[in-house]
Image (cartoon, rainbow, N blue to C red; front, side):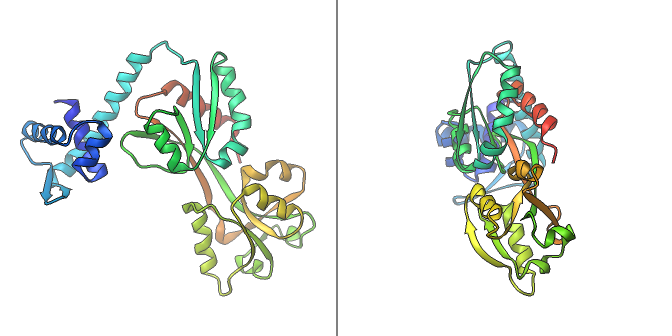
Length: 293
């Protein structure tokens, strides 16, 4: 069975179009069509139904898809291992979101350099969508992002950063240690808004309240939000990694809210399928060693 045919099948299913799959694979649309026709002859069945420009998997196509994805991933991993065995690049280009750059990289990168003392590390900070584009164009080697679903990209869970309510020293809620969401209705709330699905879960909690919270400050920068709380301008839901130093110093105190328990920022480490496996494994091991909240 031809691996190129399987690759075309997986990509067409993901992008929902022969043309888009051709663009990503840097081949012509007729070549993609020919590969699918060849695959259908090998399988002795149709894998796609075509209605004009619309395509969908047939029942047989849906049955074959998970096996095709597994075959493609194993092939790409094996190919990379053969081609890169014993070779370590001179430069490692890492992309990360702002919060990861601020609160994870300063501890992680020196540890990575101890494992690979002869490489130079280049860090690029950008939003998730931009980093995915840079990874696909091979302008970066790895990236730390929120979430991705793409057949060309491997995603590894890296860490979960719990989101909790933090108040300043001396705030009345400190004595309680825990509270219900309704207890903060009268409080001045600082809200960090980054647009991710994780933060949207907080919005849903707010929508369930009889009275909405008093959001006086809505900011798009974690450091700004944190400093407003330190200046006693309000209280705020913040990820734990961003306030580790302030909590250890006693300047900020976590207050457990029952309705928001379990909400966290999930960060994944991503790479192109089969590439930079050694670096990925090292980073996952380092992350497991110190990201304990």
